[in-house]
Amino acid sequence: MAEVKDAVIIGAGSAGLAVAVGLRKQGARNIVLLEREDEPGGILRQCIHDGFGLIRFGEKLSGPEYADRFIAEAAALGVDIQTRASVIGLTRDKRVTAVTRQGLKEYQAKAVILAMGCRERTRGALGIPGVRAAGIYTAGVVQAFVNLRNLMPARNAVILGSGDVGLIVARRLTLEGCKVSAVIEKLPYPSGLPRNVQQCLRDFDIPLYLSHTVTDIKGDARIQSVEVSALDDEGIPVPGSAKEFPCDTLVLSVGLIPENELSRMADIELDPCTGGPLVDEFYQTSQEGIFAAGNVLHIHDLVDHVSVEGEKLALAAAEYIHAGKLPACPIRLEPGAGVSSVVPQWISGDRDVDLDIRVSVPAMDKRLTLRQGGVALKSMSYRKVNPPETIRVRLESNEINARVSRDQATRDQGIRDKETREQRTRDQAIRVVASGDQGNPGDPDNPGDQDNPGNPGADINIQVMIEE
Image (cartoon, rainbow, N blue to C red; front, side, top):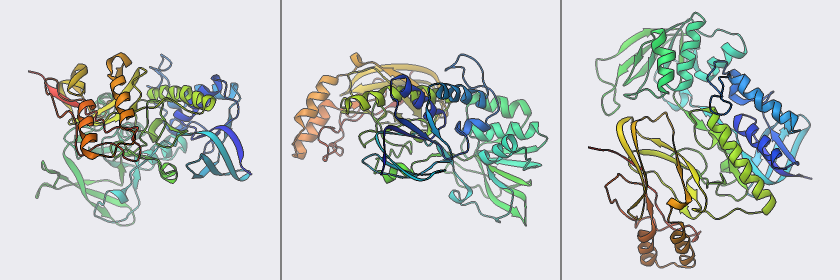
Protein backbone atom coordinates (compact mmCIF):
# COMPACT_ATOMS: atom_id res chain seq x y z
CA MET A 1 0.00 0.00 0.00
CA ALA A 2 1.30 3.44 -0.92
CA GLU A 3 2.31 5.87 1.81
CA VAL A 4 0.27 9.06 1.64
CA LYS A 5 2.35 12.25 1.71
CA ASP A 6 1.55 15.93 1.47
CA ALA A 7 4.60 16.33 -0.76
CA VAL A 8 7.26 14.13 -2.31
CA ILE A 9 10.38 16.00 -3.41
CA ILE A 10 12.63 14.22 -5.91
CA GLY A 11 16.25 15.34 -5.65
CA ALA A 12 18.15 16.78 -2.67
CA GLY A 13 20.28 19.32 -4.51
CA SER A 14 19.99 23.05 -4.02
CA ALA A 15 16.45 23.21 -5.43
CA GLY A 16 15.06 20.23 -3.52
CA LEU A 17 16.59 21.32 -0.22
CA ALA A 18 15.20 24.85 -0.61
CA VAL A 19 11.74 23.47 -1.36
CA ALA A 20 11.83 21.08 1.62
CA VAL A 21 12.90 23.83 4.02
CA GLY A 22 10.30 26.19 2.59
CA LEU A 23 7.47 23.66 2.89
CA ARG A 24 8.33 22.93 6.51
CA LYS A 25 8.32 26.64 7.27
CA GLN A 26 4.85 26.84 5.69
CA GLY A 27 3.59 24.16 8.04
CA ALA A 28 3.79 21.08 5.81
CA ARG A 29 4.81 18.17 8.03
CA ASN A 30 4.15 15.00 6.05
CA ILE A 31 6.81 15.38 3.37
CA VAL A 32 9.72 13.26 2.16
CA LEU A 33 12.84 14.22 0.20
CA LEU A 34 14.25 11.44 -2.00
CA GLU A 35 17.91 11.50 -3.07
CA ARG A 36 19.63 8.77 -5.10
CA GLU A 37 23.16 9.66 -3.96
CA ASP A 38 24.73 8.74 -0.61
CA GLU A 39 24.44 12.30 0.70
CA PRO A 40 22.24 15.33 0.05
CA GLY A 41 23.71 18.41 -1.59
CA GLY A 42 23.73 17.49 -5.26
CA ILE A 43 26.49 18.80 -7.51
CA LEU A 44 27.50 21.35 -4.86
CA ARG A 45 29.37 18.67 -2.97
CA GLN A 46 32.12 18.59 -5.62
CA CYS A 47 32.24 22.36 -6.25
CA ILE A 48 34.93 23.25 -3.73
CA HIS A 49 35.66 26.66 -5.28
CA ASP A 50 34.05 29.74 -3.74
CA GLY A 51 31.66 32.28 -5.23
CA PHE A 52 28.40 30.75 -4.02
CA GLY A 53 25.98 32.50 -1.65
CA LEU A 54 26.60 36.15 -2.47
CA ILE A 55 22.94 36.69 -3.39
CA ARG A 56 21.21 34.26 -1.03
CA PHE A 57 23.41 34.72 2.07
CA GLY A 58 25.36 37.89 1.33
CA GLU A 59 28.71 36.15 1.72
CA LYS A 60 31.12 34.10 -0.36
CA LEU A 61 30.89 30.34 0.25
CA SER A 62 32.22 27.15 -1.33
CA GLY A 63 29.74 24.69 -2.81
CA PRO A 64 29.80 22.30 0.18
CA GLU A 65 29.44 25.24 2.60
CA TYR A 66 26.45 26.53 0.65
CA ALA A 67 24.78 23.11 0.63
CA ASP A 68 25.49 22.61 4.34
CA ARG A 69 23.47 25.74 5.18
CA PHE A 70 20.34 24.14 3.75
CA ILE A 71 21.14 20.63 4.94
CA ALA A 72 21.54 21.89 8.52
CA GLU A 73 18.31 23.89 8.32
CA ALA A 74 16.44 20.90 6.89
CA ALA A 75 17.73 18.71 9.73
CA ALA A 76 16.73 21.30 12.32
CA LEU A 77 13.22 21.42 10.85
CA GLY A 78 12.94 17.63 10.87
CA VAL A 79 12.79 17.07 7.11
CA ASP A 80 12.73 13.36 6.25
CA ILE A 81 15.64 12.94 3.78
CA GLN A 82 15.90 9.48 2.27
CA THR A 83 19.30 8.99 0.59
CA ARG A 84 20.19 6.14 -1.78
CA ALA A 85 16.57 6.28 -2.91
CA SER A 86 16.18 6.14 -6.69
CA VAL A 87 12.81 7.14 -8.09
CA ILE A 88 11.89 4.81 -10.95
CA GLY A 89 8.29 5.76 -11.55
CA LEU A 90 6.00 8.81 -11.58
CA THR A 91 2.39 8.91 -12.75
CA ARG A 92 0.05 11.74 -13.68
CA ASP A 93 -1.94 11.16 -10.49
CA LYS A 94 1.19 11.86 -8.40
CA ARG A 95 2.11 8.30 -7.49
CA VAL A 96 5.85 7.93 -6.93
CA THR A 97 7.75 4.62 -6.98
CA ALA A 98 11.26 4.48 -5.50
CA VAL A 99 13.91 1.87 -4.81
CA THR A 100 15.20 2.59 -1.29
CA ARG A 101 17.41 0.99 1.36
CA GLN A 102 14.23 -0.55 2.76
CA GLY A 103 13.20 -1.95 -0.61
CA LEU A 104 10.59 -0.85 -3.13
CA LYS A 105 8.34 1.96 -1.86
CA GLU A 106 5.31 3.72 -3.27
CA TYR A 107 4.10 7.16 -2.27
CA GLN A 108 0.79 8.83 -3.07
CA ALA A 109 1.38 12.57 -2.86
CA LYS A 110 -0.83 15.63 -2.84
CA ALA A 111 2.05 17.45 -4.53
CA VAL A 112 5.19 16.23 -6.28
CA ILE A 113 8.22 18.47 -6.72
CA LEU A 114 10.70 17.67 -9.50
CA ALA A 115 14.23 18.76 -8.53
CA MET A 116 16.36 16.15 -10.32
CA GLY A 117 18.83 18.65 -11.76
CA CYS A 118 20.62 18.00 -15.04
CA ARG A 119 23.19 15.74 -16.65
CA GLU A 120 26.13 16.32 -18.97
CA ARG A 121 26.12 15.72 -22.70
CA THR A 122 28.55 12.91 -23.53
CA ARG A 123 30.73 11.97 -26.51
CA GLY A 124 28.01 9.73 -27.87
CA ALA A 125 25.81 12.78 -28.45
CA LEU A 126 28.54 14.58 -30.39
CA GLY A 127 29.63 12.04 -32.98
CA ILE A 128 33.32 12.98 -32.88
CA PRO A 129 35.36 10.76 -35.23
CA GLY A 130 38.31 8.82 -33.88
CA VAL A 131 39.34 5.99 -31.61
CA ARG A 132 37.43 4.86 -28.54
CA ALA A 133 40.41 5.22 -26.23
CA ALA A 134 40.64 5.76 -22.49
CA GLY A 135 41.02 9.34 -21.30
CA ILE A 136 37.75 10.92 -22.50
CA TYR A 137 35.66 12.32 -19.65
CA THR A 138 32.93 14.87 -19.07
CA ALA A 139 33.93 17.91 -17.02
CA GLY A 140 31.76 16.91 -14.07
CA VAL A 141 33.39 13.48 -13.88
CA VAL A 142 36.87 15.05 -13.85
CA GLN A 143 35.75 17.46 -11.14
CA ALA A 144 34.45 14.56 -9.03
CA PHE A 145 37.69 12.59 -9.52
CA VAL A 146 39.84 15.48 -8.31
CA ASN A 147 37.66 17.05 -5.61
CA LEU A 148 35.85 14.04 -4.13
CA ARG A 149 38.16 11.09 -4.77
CA ASN A 150 41.58 12.75 -4.77
CA LEU A 151 42.39 11.19 -8.13
CA MET A 152 44.30 12.94 -10.92
CA PRO A 153 42.91 11.80 -14.30
CA ALA A 154 45.16 13.87 -16.58
CA ARG A 155 48.69 15.15 -17.16
CA ASN A 156 48.04 16.99 -20.42
CA ALA A 157 44.44 17.88 -21.23
CA VAL A 158 42.41 19.53 -23.96
CA ILE A 159 38.95 20.76 -23.04
CA LEU A 160 36.17 20.78 -25.63
CA GLY A 161 33.56 23.41 -24.81
CA SER A 162 33.77 26.57 -22.75
CA GLY A 163 30.83 25.99 -20.41
CA ASP A 164 31.26 27.09 -16.80
CA VAL A 165 32.05 23.61 -15.47
CA GLY A 166 34.71 23.15 -18.15
CA LEU A 167 36.30 26.51 -17.36
CA ILE A 168 36.41 25.74 -13.65
CA VAL A 169 37.88 22.30 -14.35
CA ALA A 170 40.57 23.91 -16.55
CA ARG A 171 41.66 26.01 -13.59
CA ARG A 172 41.42 23.12 -11.14
CA LEU A 173 43.55 20.82 -13.28
CA THR A 174 46.14 23.58 -13.73
CA LEU A 175 46.34 24.14 -9.99
CA GLU A 176 46.94 20.40 -9.54
CA GLY A 177 49.88 20.42 -11.98
CA CYS A 178 48.17 19.34 -15.19
CA LYS A 179 48.96 21.15 -18.43
CA VAL A 180 45.78 22.37 -20.10
CA SER A 181 46.88 22.86 -23.70
CA ALA A 182 43.70 24.49 -24.97
CA VAL A 183 40.00 25.10 -24.49
CA ILE A 184 38.11 24.58 -27.75
CA GLU A 185 34.75 26.28 -28.40
CA LYS A 186 32.67 25.84 -31.56
CA LEU A 187 30.80 29.11 -31.08
CA PRO A 188 32.34 32.50 -31.89
CA TYR A 189 31.94 33.47 -28.23
CA PRO A 190 32.52 31.68 -24.88
CA SER A 191 29.67 29.59 -23.46
CA GLY A 192 30.55 30.36 -19.84
CA LEU A 193 30.17 33.43 -17.69
CA PRO A 194 32.64 36.26 -18.41
CA ARG A 195 34.02 36.14 -14.87
CA ASN A 196 34.91 32.45 -15.31
CA VAL A 197 36.60 33.13 -18.63
CA GLN A 198 38.76 35.74 -16.90
CA GLN A 199 39.47 33.91 -13.64
CA CYS A 200 39.87 30.40 -15.06
CA LEU A 201 41.52 30.94 -18.45
CA ARG A 202 43.06 34.37 -18.87
CA ASP A 203 44.50 34.50 -15.36
CA PHE A 204 46.25 31.17 -16.04
CA ASP A 205 47.24 31.86 -19.66
CA ILE A 206 45.15 28.98 -20.96
CA PRO A 207 44.43 29.54 -24.68
CA LEU A 208 40.81 29.67 -25.84
CA TYR A 209 40.09 28.79 -29.47
CA LEU A 210 36.73 30.17 -30.60
CA SER A 211 34.97 28.88 -33.74
CA HIS A 212 36.96 25.62 -33.50
CA THR A 213 36.09 22.02 -32.73
CA VAL A 214 37.69 18.60 -32.31
CA THR A 215 37.51 16.72 -35.62
CA ASP A 216 39.50 13.61 -34.73
CA ILE A 217 40.68 11.68 -31.66
CA LYS A 218 43.91 9.70 -32.00
CA GLY A 219 45.52 7.09 -29.79
CA ASP A 220 45.58 3.43 -28.88
CA ALA A 221 44.67 2.16 -25.44
CA ARG A 222 44.86 5.78 -24.23
CA ILE A 223 44.17 8.98 -26.13
CA GLN A 224 47.41 10.50 -27.49
CA SER A 225 46.26 13.61 -29.35
CA VAL A 226 43.26 15.41 -30.83
CA GLU A 227 42.87 17.15 -34.15
CA VAL A 228 41.31 20.62 -33.93
CA SER A 229 39.89 22.46 -36.94
CA ALA A 230 38.57 25.96 -37.48
CA LEU A 231 34.89 26.35 -38.37
CA ASP A 232 33.37 28.60 -40.99
CA ASP A 233 30.25 30.71 -40.50
CA GLU A 234 28.09 27.65 -41.15
CA GLY A 235 29.89 25.57 -38.51
CA ILE A 236 31.66 23.42 -41.11
CA PRO A 237 35.36 22.56 -40.57
CA VAL A 238 37.61 24.64 -42.81
CA PRO A 239 39.77 22.42 -45.08
CA GLY A 240 43.46 22.70 -44.32
CA SER A 241 42.92 24.30 -40.90
CA ALA A 242 43.49 21.16 -38.79
CA LYS A 243 46.04 21.36 -36.00
CA GLU A 244 47.12 18.49 -33.75
CA PHE A 245 47.28 18.90 -29.98
CA PRO A 246 49.17 16.17 -28.05
CA CYS A 247 47.25 15.20 -24.91
CA ASP A 248 46.37 12.21 -22.75
CA THR A 249 42.90 13.46 -21.79
CA LEU A 250 39.97 15.08 -23.58
CA VAL A 251 37.50 16.79 -21.24
CA LEU A 252 33.98 17.43 -22.60
CA SER A 253 32.10 20.52 -21.45
CA VAL A 254 29.52 20.60 -24.20
CA GLY A 255 26.26 21.38 -22.48
CA LEU A 256 23.87 20.33 -19.72
CA ILE A 257 20.55 18.58 -20.25
CA PRO A 258 17.65 18.82 -17.74
CA GLU A 259 17.00 15.36 -16.28
CA ASN A 260 13.40 14.83 -17.36
CA GLU A 261 12.86 11.09 -17.79
CA LEU A 262 10.40 11.13 -14.87
CA SER A 263 8.64 14.14 -16.38
CA ARG A 264 8.06 12.17 -19.56
CA MET A 265 6.69 9.25 -17.55
CA ALA A 266 4.03 11.57 -16.16
CA ASP A 267 3.24 13.01 -19.63
CA ILE A 268 4.46 16.46 -18.60
CA GLU A 269 4.80 18.85 -21.50
CA LEU A 270 8.39 19.95 -22.11
CA ASP A 271 9.68 23.21 -23.54
CA PRO A 272 11.89 22.59 -26.60
CA CYS A 273 13.73 25.83 -25.81
CA THR A 274 14.85 24.93 -22.27
CA GLY A 275 14.56 21.13 -22.31
CA GLY A 276 12.59 21.38 -19.06
CA PRO A 277 8.86 21.36 -18.24
CA LEU A 278 6.54 24.14 -19.26
CA VAL A 279 5.47 25.82 -16.02
CA ASP A 280 3.24 28.62 -14.85
CA GLU A 281 4.20 31.38 -12.42
CA PHE A 282 3.69 28.93 -9.53
CA TYR A 283 6.22 26.51 -11.09
CA GLN A 284 3.38 24.06 -11.68
CA THR A 285 3.81 21.88 -14.76
CA SER A 286 1.16 20.84 -17.28
CA GLN A 287 0.11 18.15 -14.77
CA GLU A 288 -1.78 19.68 -11.86
CA GLY A 289 0.02 19.29 -8.54
CA ILE A 290 3.39 18.44 -10.08
CA PHE A 291 5.95 21.25 -9.79
CA ALA A 292 9.50 21.77 -11.04
CA ALA A 293 12.44 23.96 -10.02
CA GLY A 294 16.19 24.20 -10.47
CA ASN A 295 18.20 22.80 -13.37
CA VAL A 296 15.50 20.25 -14.18
CA LEU A 297 13.40 23.26 -15.21
CA HIS A 298 16.09 25.25 -17.04
CA ILE A 299 19.85 25.54 -16.69
CA HIS A 300 20.71 28.27 -14.19
CA ASP A 301 23.79 30.45 -14.15
CA LEU A 302 23.92 30.85 -10.34
CA VAL A 303 22.95 28.42 -7.59
CA ASP A 304 21.60 31.30 -5.48
CA HIS A 305 18.85 31.76 -8.05
CA VAL A 306 18.03 28.04 -7.85
CA SER A 307 17.47 28.35 -4.10
CA VAL A 308 15.31 31.44 -4.45
CA GLU A 309 13.27 29.64 -7.11
CA GLY A 310 12.83 26.66 -4.77
CA GLU A 311 11.65 28.91 -1.97
CA LYS A 312 9.05 30.53 -4.25
CA LEU A 313 7.89 27.09 -5.37
CA ALA A 314 7.48 26.04 -1.73
CA LEU A 315 5.03 28.90 -1.14
CA ALA A 316 2.97 27.86 -4.17
CA ALA A 317 3.08 24.14 -3.33
CA ALA A 318 1.98 24.87 0.25
CA GLU A 319 -0.95 26.86 -1.12
CA TYR A 320 -1.83 23.99 -3.44
CA ILE A 321 -1.62 21.38 -0.67
CA HIS A 322 -3.91 23.47 1.51
CA ALA A 323 -6.45 24.61 -1.12
CA GLY A 324 -6.20 21.80 -3.67
CA LYS A 325 -5.78 24.20 -6.57
CA LEU A 326 -4.00 27.34 -7.72
CA PRO A 327 -5.21 30.35 -9.74
CA ALA A 328 -5.48 29.85 -13.50
CA CYS A 329 -2.65 31.14 -15.67
CA PRO A 330 -4.18 31.85 -19.12
CA ILE A 331 -1.52 34.26 -20.41
CA ARG A 332 1.22 32.63 -22.47
CA LEU A 333 4.80 33.89 -22.70
CA GLU A 334 7.02 32.83 -25.61
CA PRO A 335 10.48 33.87 -26.82
CA GLY A 336 10.78 35.84 -30.03
CA ALA A 337 13.69 36.84 -32.25
CA GLY A 338 16.91 37.32 -30.34
CA VAL A 339 15.71 35.38 -27.29
CA SER A 340 16.22 31.67 -26.68
CA SER A 341 13.95 31.06 -23.67
CA VAL A 342 11.55 32.59 -21.16
CA VAL A 343 10.54 30.98 -17.83
CA PRO A 344 7.77 30.74 -16.64
CA GLN A 345 5.78 30.21 -19.80
CA TRP A 346 2.33 30.91 -18.32
CA ILE A 347 1.21 33.69 -15.96
CA SER A 348 -2.04 34.70 -14.29
CA GLY A 349 -1.73 38.47 -14.65
CA ASP A 350 -2.97 38.86 -11.09
CA ARG A 351 0.41 38.79 -9.37
CA ASP A 352 3.87 40.22 -9.91
CA VAL A 353 6.10 37.62 -11.54
CA ASP A 354 9.84 37.30 -12.10
CA LEU A 355 10.85 36.22 -15.60
CA ASP A 356 14.09 34.41 -16.43
CA ILE A 357 15.14 35.33 -19.96
CA ARG A 358 18.08 34.08 -22.07
CA VAL A 359 19.19 35.78 -25.26
CA SER A 360 20.35 33.87 -28.33
CA VAL A 361 23.62 35.66 -29.11
CA PRO A 362 25.85 38.21 -27.38
CA ALA A 363 25.18 41.82 -28.32
CA MET A 364 25.76 45.39 -27.19
CA ASP A 365 23.26 48.20 -26.59
CA LYS A 366 20.04 46.25 -26.75
CA ARG A 367 16.50 47.00 -25.70
CA LEU A 368 14.21 44.30 -24.34
CA THR A 369 10.53 45.09 -24.77
CA LEU A 370 7.39 43.19 -23.76
CA ARG A 371 4.36 43.90 -25.90
CA GLN A 372 0.72 42.92 -25.59
CA GLY A 373 -1.35 43.31 -28.72
CA GLY A 374 1.21 45.72 -30.16
CA VAL A 375 1.35 47.80 -26.98
CA ALA A 376 4.60 47.93 -25.00
CA LEU A 377 4.13 46.67 -21.45
CA LYS A 378 7.73 47.10 -20.39
CA SER A 379 10.96 48.16 -22.07
CA MET A 380 14.51 47.99 -20.72
CA SER A 381 17.89 48.96 -22.12
CA TYR A 382 21.01 46.84 -21.62
CA ARG A 383 24.59 47.82 -22.33
CA LYS A 384 25.43 44.17 -22.98
CA VAL A 385 23.49 40.91 -23.21
CA ASN A 386 25.14 37.50 -23.14
CA PRO A 387 23.63 33.98 -23.59
CA PRO A 388 25.29 32.47 -20.47
CA GLU A 389 23.79 35.19 -18.26
CA THR A 390 20.12 35.10 -17.34
CA ILE A 391 18.26 38.39 -17.59
CA ARG A 392 15.80 38.68 -14.73
CA VAL A 393 12.82 40.94 -15.25
CA ARG A 394 9.98 41.61 -12.82
CA LEU A 395 6.66 42.00 -14.62
CA GLU A 396 4.13 43.63 -12.32
CA SER A 397 0.47 42.77 -12.48
CA ASN A 398 -0.51 46.38 -13.14
CA GLU A 399 1.62 46.28 -16.30
CA ILE A 400 -0.41 43.45 -17.84
CA ASN A 401 -3.74 43.69 -19.61
CA ALA A 402 -4.79 40.62 -17.65
CA ARG A 403 -8.51 41.28 -17.40
CA VAL A 404 -8.90 41.41 -21.16
CA SER A 405 -6.91 38.19 -21.47
CA ARG A 406 -9.04 36.46 -18.82
CA ASP A 407 -12.24 37.64 -20.49
CA GLN A 408 -10.88 36.33 -23.78
CA ALA A 409 -10.13 32.95 -22.20
CA THR A 410 -13.71 32.77 -20.93
CA ARG A 411 -15.16 33.70 -24.31
CA ASP A 412 -13.01 31.06 -25.99
CA GLN A 413 -14.62 28.33 -23.92
CA GLY A 414 -16.46 26.02 -26.30
CA ILE A 415 -15.50 28.01 -29.42
CA ARG A 416 -14.25 25.83 -32.22
CA ASP A 417 -14.68 28.17 -35.15
CA LYS A 418 -11.11 28.73 -36.38
CA GLU A 419 -11.62 32.17 -37.94
CA THR A 420 -13.28 33.57 -34.81
CA ARG A 421 -10.58 32.12 -32.58
CA GLU A 422 -7.80 33.51 -34.81
CA GLN A 423 -9.27 37.01 -34.78
CA ARG A 424 -9.65 37.07 -31.04
CA THR A 425 -6.12 35.78 -30.62
CA ARG A 426 -4.89 38.65 -32.77
CA ASP A 427 -6.77 41.14 -30.62
CA GLN A 428 -5.44 39.92 -27.26
CA ALA A 429 -2.07 38.32 -27.99
CA ILE A 430 0.88 39.32 -25.87
CA ARG A 431 4.11 39.83 -27.75
CA VAL A 432 7.53 41.00 -26.77
CA VAL A 433 9.04 42.63 -29.83
CA ALA A 434 11.68 45.14 -30.74
CA SER A 435 10.97 48.62 -29.37
CA GLY A 436 9.32 50.69 -32.09
CA ASP A 437 8.33 47.58 -34.04
CA GLN A 438 4.57 46.98 -33.98
CA GLY A 439 5.24 43.35 -34.74
CA ASN A 440 2.60 40.80 -35.65
CA PRO A 441 -0.20 41.19 -33.08
CA GLY A 442 -1.19 37.55 -33.44
CA ASP A 443 -0.18 34.30 -35.00
CA PRO A 444 -3.01 32.79 -37.03
CA ASP A 445 -1.17 29.47 -37.07
CA ASN A 446 -1.31 29.34 -33.28
CA PRO A 447 -4.99 29.67 -32.34
CA GLY A 448 -4.44 28.22 -28.89
CA ASP A 449 -4.71 24.89 -27.18
CA GLN A 450 -7.92 23.46 -28.62
CA ASP A 451 -7.98 20.74 -26.00
CA ASN A 452 -7.77 23.41 -23.30
CA PRO A 453 -9.83 26.39 -24.50
CA GLY A 454 -9.06 28.21 -21.27
CA ASN A 455 -5.60 28.89 -22.69
CA PRO A 456 -5.99 31.17 -25.73
CA GLY A 457 -3.20 31.27 -28.30
CA ALA A 458 -1.53 34.33 -26.79
CA ASP A 459 2.04 34.93 -27.94
CA ILE A 460 4.66 36.65 -25.87
CA ASN A 461 7.64 37.10 -28.12
CA ILE A 462 10.74 38.70 -26.68
CA GLN A 463 13.02 40.44 -29.13
CA VAL A 464 16.28 42.35 -28.64
CA MET A 465 17.03 45.39 -30.78
CA ILE A 466 19.90 47.85 -31.24
CA GLU A 467 18.85 51.42 -30.62
CA GLU A 468 20.29 54.15 -32.82
